[in-house]
Length: 440
Figure 1 (cartoon, rainbow, N blue to C red):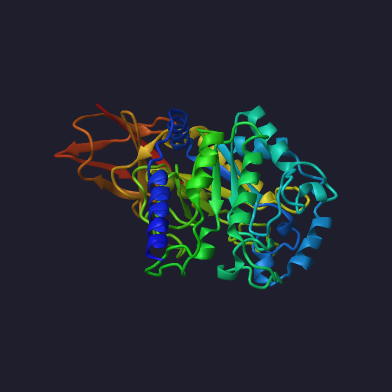
Figure 2 (tube, rainbow, N blue to C red; figure 1 turned 30 degrees about the vertical axis):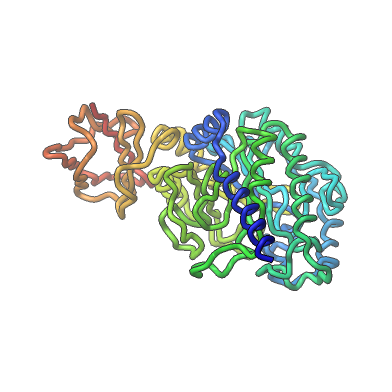
């Protein structure tokens, strides 16, 4: 017995070392740099879960069995879906990439997969959504990232006995992670082989196998064998980034870190206990109302000011904003989303210089606004007009000039002993007055 335990320990240690030995390729580092400069992306939550109009967790929340939920497959016929329009909508909003749901926790695959019969080709629609989106993204110059759920409320071989969710789906079999792992590898191989260059894989569901958020021990109840999953992805497409929404610090092999409904360093949603990594790019994913998937009763939409200021604050923390929409089951993007995306796109036409390719400010967001930097320019974003703003320890020896990014109006200032002071009493209705401070 002791000998077997020792062998097991050595095998686990070897797997750990393999994962920790991960060194990103030059192509991967280049993709990370592009991602950090992009700053703004579109998250799309869409699938059969959109039909009930109650969000993407409807199967779990309403305790719908696999047998009953599978009937939605016969109703999913998005005849108004237009990939070209979706991608151009993101592009016109100033977004640089799209993260598309390919398989959510309900187990439905949005592409022509050989490894599950619960997929888009079994619906009346019978068209590969992932292929149409991939082709259009490549055509319009938008990077495509793919969301993939580690969790499955439908499959028998998922280790559902130890999972925190999906306990009312009516499964009677026993989980078999070796079988489930092979299934995931096969599907990921399809996604990374048949759809051209993919910017990254966005994993979700790890938390299903951990203690509740905030618990001292957040170790997983199963060994996900990430070294195998991540190794496969980096082998198939070395540039492809990997992120995992486990709400923990990045694991070996991961290329970016995400924060759900939060900015890095905040925990307003109660999901983000992890510290922001200084080693990989960061991303904050946020809903435009209160729901990820289509929700008929959710009218709690964020205002133009809230959305723009969230984008600015994310950039000022060195993070991207992945802003979500939940299209209707027929394939239309509802007007509440379109209007807000148009407003953000218009704002970025003038103010994009203060967002794209910027780095975090030297101070964190304040009540009055926040700071982004690029080269010899420091962008001071003023959300709330006030008599004076004073910035101590300002990172400059000499200032050349200061002016408003929108229109170029000169901003008068004083600069002495490392403190920059200027009047921020702007008489306008701007959601963000960006003061450009050019330094030597």
